[in-house]
Image (cartoon, rainbow, N blue to C red; front, side, top):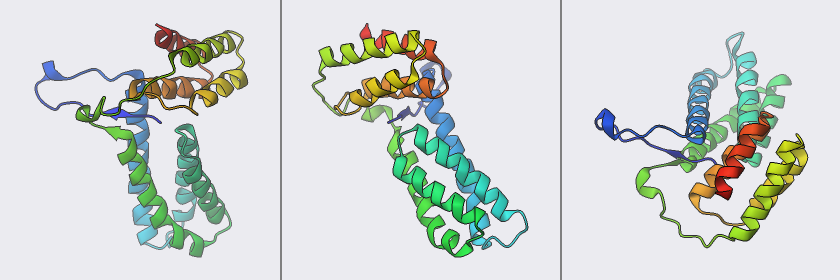
Amino acid sequence: MLRMKTINQGNAADKKPLSPLGQLTEAFCRDVERVIATLEPIHDNKYRRSDDVHTYIISVHAMKSALANVGETELAALAGALEEAGSNGDIDVMLANTPLFLDALRAVVKKITVTDEDEGSVIVDEDHAYLCEKLRVIQTACDAYDKKAAKDALAALRQKTWTRPTKERLGAIDAHLLHGDFEEASAIAGELLG
């Protein structure tokens, strides 16, 4: 799961630069907030304006993809169902399920947003040998541009419990693989291998 650190709003010298993963998470959260701000008034207006349904379909489609990218498959499926309802002009389904969808989006943002004080609060005994083995598989797959093999190794890693920094790095690898950026995914795996 992607995580984001909030940055201390004190003086500029105290600010930490965001990691690439933090930037991805921040962008995801901004997209969610933008979609919520778009969908709420459309929903409150009961989809009466001529372009409401079209805007609704575009917004839930964007969220479907973004949610799938961060591993929120159930919520991505709900977005898909809402997109289909919009395409079919099924206003009743949209009216009934959009508030649940918006609340779930807020919950995802809350879940992936972690303050600095929360860092390190979970203590996990990592299986370092297993981690290294799978990271080498990911690197080899990236060198061969084999997205499926890299994703399979990543999926195997996600079956275990990892510390927050390791999970963040695995999330970054996943995000780069999604966009076909094999070099960056391999580089992050190399950083984790140390």
